[in-house]
Structures are given as structure tokens and as C-alpha cells.
Length: 140
Image (cartoon, rainbow, N blue to C red; front, side):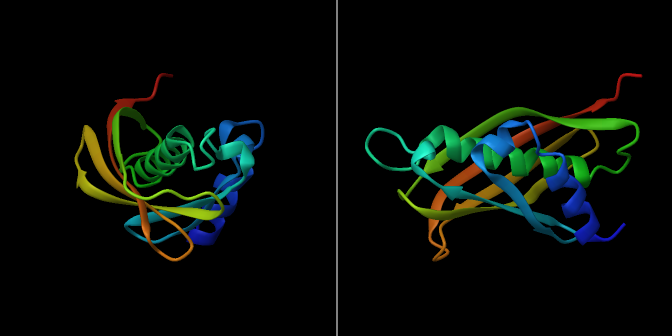
């Protein structure tokens, strides 16, 4: 399956999920990274008029979890699930797209640690996120 086909199938599975509600979409992947984005609307803002940190983390966790799952060595037998996530928000944004790029810091047999960088349309860093996923056997 091509990278484009994988992205198409992943986006098709967004219906009825938090991803659809927040407008999170997968954009592209290569052999080591996954990219996604979310259009910031008034529904994503906190009362101060800036992007809510929870919306930022939802984007980061979505892209980080998906990256772990699509890059599993044996996706038929295992699943990656979030275990820990931490973010540093360094710049605010109130409109436009925020882009998430997930890449591995560690890709082990039982755990993955990912760095997810959230940037704005001008490629300025908005948030830096570190996520740990545990790799579990699928239940039959």
C-alpha cells in the first residue's frame, strides 16, 4: 500500500470521532514521520481568544498515536496506546492551521517515544510535545 493510500484510509476513519469534531486530518507520511493539521476556529479557542491547550494536545496525541500504530513492526498482532503525554506551549495562535509532525525518539519492541512538534502556518513552534506509547498484544 502506498503512503497516499494509507493517508486516505486513515482520514476515512475520522467520521464520528474527536478528529472529525476538531477538524484534525492526516496530511502525509514517509518512512519515519507522520504529518497532520487542524484548522483553528472559534471552537478551538479558550476564553482569552487563543488556541486551547487541550485542542493542541488532542492534535498531538492523534498524530503521535497514529504514527506508533502505522509504524508497528507487527500491526496484525499489536496495538500502540498512549501512556504519557507532556507539552510545552511556547507561542499562542488564534487562527490558521496548526501542523503536527510526529517523529520517533525511541522505537522499541514494547514502547515508543515520540516528539510531536506543533507549528503555525509560518512554521513557528507553537508547542513541543513528548509522548510515550506502550505496545500491547491485540486481544482476539
